[in-house]
Image 1 (cartoon, helix red, strand yellow):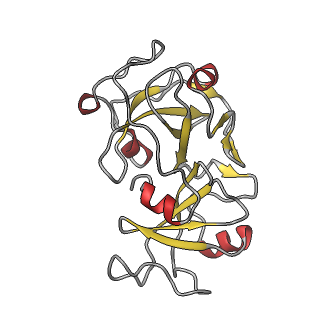
Image 2 (tube, rainbow, N blue to C red; image 1 turned 60 degrees about the vertical axis):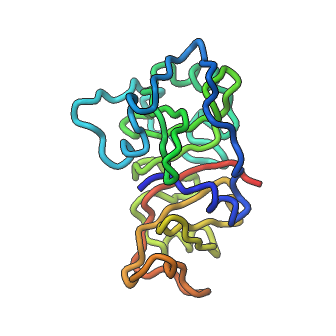
Length: 216
């Protein structure tokens, strides 16, 4: 599974669907290898390659998701500020659902890893997407990877469900920056019919990925 498409973010009016692509000029602080020869970091969220060393810890403690931040990292944070907090990230690209490479880092808090996606490769780049599949990283209200959709609803209140690229997502008005990708419902059959009719919840779904993004 990879991060949700911009189309989905636009549908729920939570994401910033327009952001620039990696320009030719590169940051002096980071060497951006060609996307075809660099790590495709979105896949590392689900299966870390055995021969790839983990990035150096930003902190030795597990981070908490709060508002628009994961520990010291936050949406719209500048590239220099990210590197000040995590000076030795694993550098690569996030190809996402649309197969378009975007500059990204993999960083680590304690044993937990976080994917950081940037707007571009210049020194003026900012963070627009943070994601984790690690159950150790939790929101301030206890949402974590692996919890049931019923427990998610109990903590965040009424949920809005949307489908994108044959994936099921949940959002809450209480947490405008928070996005959640769910496992597919137990009774799902075809793409295009994953969203349950209100007030039903998708039966058997669990939290698969937690991510933060720019809110409208």
